[in-house]
Image (tube, rainbow, N blue to C red; front, top):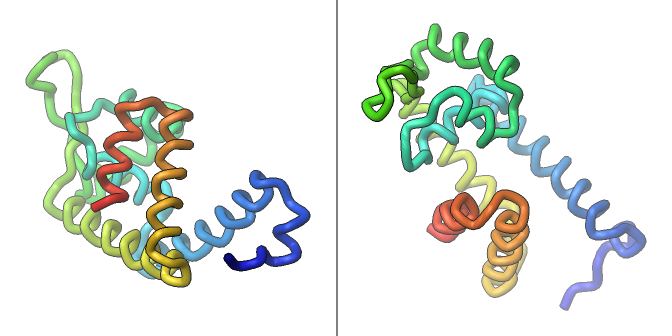
Length: 160
């Protein structure tokens, strides 16, 4: 077993997590920027691309932990850029649901490729067994925070 970096030995796990998160977000931000994407746009496209059901704007705001007011302008810009569209819900004609356009779907696939390649890069220095343990522990933490149903879906995505 590797000895932790001296700076990490003096930090709580939250401090380590924050440091890891900053590095990961910077690397992800660089890749998004190279693809002319913002983190918020990528988050919306990923949520819509992986949703098991059509999402309303309120559903999307809840899932992404965004305020509906901040999401409203982003959705409108994305709609004007041809990434998504609003359609009447088949279940409740009073509601509109958001769906990806063909262009939005292509960019969603690019986001999946970015995530896959960065994920492989980040975990490449770890033995496979540690990678599996990391995925299990991360899914367990996520399950505690957001609930069983969403975490189960995330576990399936991470595992595949």
